[in-house]
Amino acid sequence: MTGPVLDPRALARQLEGRQLIDGKLVASRSGQTFDVNSPATGELVGKAAAGDAADVAAAVESAAKAQVAWAKVPARQRGKLVAECGRLLDEHKEELSRLVALETGKALRTESRVEAGVLADAFHFYGGLGSELKGETVPFNPDMLTMTIREPIGVVGAIIPWNVPMMLMALKIAPALVAGNTVVVKSAEEAPFAVLRVAELMARILPPGAFNILSGMGPECGGPLVAHPKVGKITFTGSVETGKIIYRAAADKLIPVTLELGGKSPMIVMDDADLDKAVAGAISGMRFTRQGQSCTAASRMYVQKGIHDRFVTALKAKVDAMKMGDPLDETTDIGTIVSRQQYEKVNAYIATGKKEGGTAHECSAMPADAKLAKGLYVRPVIFTGLPKDSKVVREEIFGPVTAVLKFDTFEEALAAANDSEYGLAATIWTKDLKTALDGARRLQAGFVQVNQNLVVQPGLSYGGVKTSGLGKEATLEAMLEHFTTKKTVIINMA
Ligand code: ADP
Image 1: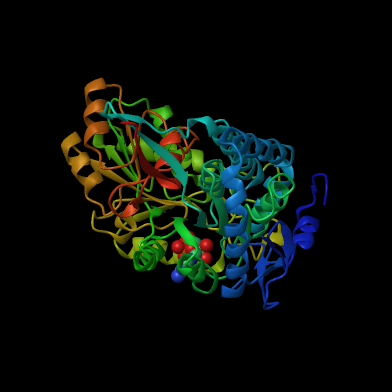
Image 2: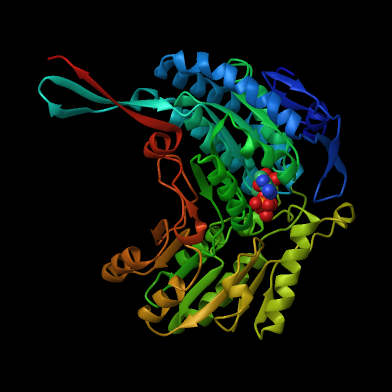
């Protein structure tokens, strides 16, 4: 496997049944595999290796051995190697986009290529930060040189989800590696191949064992990774439920964790907002092009009563114009839900919303292509008129379903927005500076935007409050806080 392989089916076949341990693509110790099917056509994309505790042990041993030498590589040099991975991943951007589109059902043009771009960007960003692993000197005593040193933790375990698998992996592994740690990743069951290809490419540049990747079921493969005595840190993105299991297991070993969990992100639209911009922001914020499968999805839209009806009409018209279809087709805006389990969950929420008294405005048309008849397509739904205690308003759906709720005063909207167990992201749309600032200060969320709805970017601190998680990602500080320990050294010269 040298140059880019643009046929994602051929690439998946080359990666079938493999994991990356100690720099080599190898089968699982048990020989077991599990099927990964395309959510658009139902076809078998490939059989993925079903890793278990024996594979975890092999990968962690390799990572622990490699870490001793890796930590001795000068920090800037480690950064240069990580940036070099970014360059190679950039060269393979198109094949990675196609592979992730095939396995997850995310549309190539609107989503998968965007993800592959941020993947390489994260490596470039962190690759430049090697020399920032600085300590401090402390004016403790004139006869003593007192300083702090940043040291790597050792072996980092990373457990990742399927919705943006390459990008979310990059935001964990690039800082971990630059800081001198080695890494073992457990990929998500639904999306093991694109991240495995990323690993295979990185293995051309990094020493064997610096970066290992396993695929397998959560409890059977992720569980032993968290529990392994040589894993000194866990960084996780996924559901609140699994985050709590991991936090408990990490507590048993007293190791640090970073948890990026769910969200139910509010969007507040004031009467004075620019309607066109707010509607465009609702489309991107709700991640309709990713079928709403985002922890930051703007799935609660609080719209002031003077603009509410026009907002709903304009939003529906825009979503109606979006094309659902084959994820690999360049003209497709919206692909499929990732798995049958998620598909059923999303449809159950739509049924619940209707029972709860909401009006379901169904958008876009189902794809006409017969080969997509088995595809896990869900028409985007905009609910109006739901009561505030509706499950659709309170719970994370992870599908193309949003609730638009009418409000009267700003205070009422703020109270409703903050009345949630989650606190990941939020947006406010207004032309009034005071309202914008007031909202930015008082909204309980880790990532607040006014009059825009950008996705996470390297360099901008990302992470939630309340049950949305613990710890922030994507910045220099995240690398220092989450992937190093601080040692105090005092040299007595008296
Ligand atoms: P989702 O609902 O988005 O699939 P999960 O939290 O179930 O979210 O999965 C996110 C990641 O966590 C996946 O890689 C999954 O395999 C892993 N996982 C699930 N259960 C466990 C567990 N008990 N221990 C460790 N990892 C797990």
